[in-house]
Amino acid sequence: MTCKEFLAILDDVIDESISPGMRSEIEVHLRKCGHCEVVFNTVRKTIEIYRCHELYEFPAEVSESLHNAIMDRCRAAKGDSQSS
Ligand SMILES: [Zn+2]
Image (cartoon, rainbow, N blue to C red; front, top):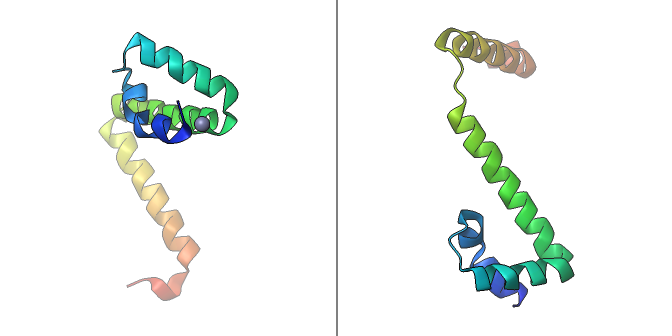
């Protein structure tokens, strides 16, 4: 397996919709190719974080006050000249 081949099937690797034979080829490649290993770990972690956030919802009140606090900070950071 080459780096190009690995990157082409990266989505399937993350989804784990690959055959066991393919999986062992990937494992062999990742063991000898640090670049692909980093790419794979980064993508996998990003997707895990995204999935966790999707499952986790703030209560509406917390979400609103948090949103307001963030907006206040944004306004403060921009300065008064930007206010309308
Ligand atoms: Zn590689």
